[in-house]
Length: 511
Image (cartoon, rainbow, N blue to C red; front, side, top):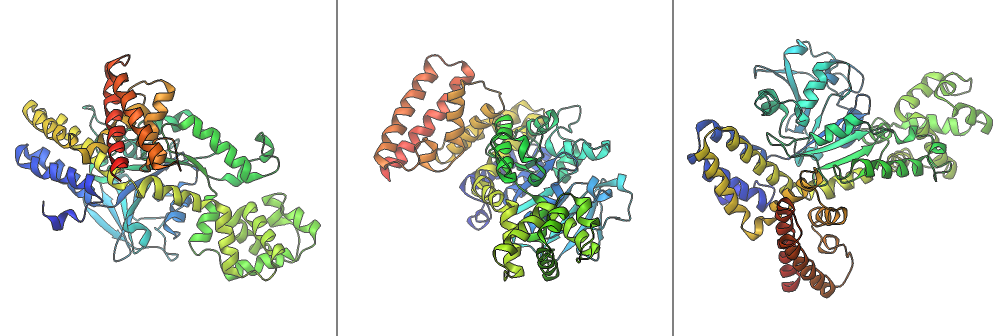
């Protein structure tokens, strides 16, 4: 692999896995080599994040907010039954990918979105590929999935294929999942007020590419969508504050879903979509100004319910109010009116920014950066390595399997690649494959879930000398634990954590 080619990898870990694949291709069967070629393609592609969740959890609305364009269909229709991949392209276009591998281009609708009716036999469709000239998609491919819990068995199957539950009799992902939608290396999981058993199952069965890498704090975030629909009075400690209620509920859900996810963040997807996609217009701002001028009693009556907001008689036309309700819901409308009350001269642009702030999207984007984008190299490398292992295992050739295993061991023995060992250990502990005492499991999570030395050691902001001493102390402790008191499985984890602390100690001492 040439140096010129290596510059396309997300970082040194991905480049190392790419060199491994290239070096192994002449030593394996033609079928396995073709699989390695697919791994190489994915390593050089943008990080692929699947947005998943139950039906009507607001996944597509959130996708539109993330992209900044209302392109994913949100109304129930045939397109919402399909997996859709949104990726960067120099020309906006949508392609229907059929199960036989053929493709057909379809035009966007008049509003610039994916058309509700594709004009094809939906049962023959594998998935959709949408290419957009959108800067967000340069380093992030967003995959919109059908909802789990749908009455449409085919839609559920498509999502389960992507999440790793759709496997054939041999335990490998089926060709549609492998070639069309597999390759999601991270998951943004959307929940509403109640976490259900199938939510936890979906996260537990999440896989990347063809390998059984479960969701964990390195590659999974959850969002509590429709935060504005929470009744604040039902959440202890929230008082009348809806957003505080959402934050408290998100914390409780995080405890239920961890260690499958790094965090659970509240968000109002509809408000975020409206503010980010250009759907909020100067006319909307003017309509809100007219509502703000109404007497207090009329305003409060309108804001009591959606029905009253659109049906109660007032000077603002019912059609205008219906449009506002569809784009902002009552919480967003109330937030906008409060902003106008505080500053009657507020501009439409400033009002849009206020709505965006109220949506909670900024926190979600920040976590996407810290959990996904900043770790894209490690996430992609770990997914690629897991895929290489799975491909070799499925080949049925013991010699081939051994050659691949030996090459991986050589790679992982290098200090610069040790982070892959740490990610593997973290995933095993997060998935419950290796049981650890709660305090030690938490320490494994901490060491593997951050690149900041202070955070890894649980001593953020401390002086370098204190961090250096503590890293050596923990390195020695984990080495002792690996030899005395640990089970064989725990001992393997302990060796990895020991070396992680030792390398961190060396780094701090030399820095």
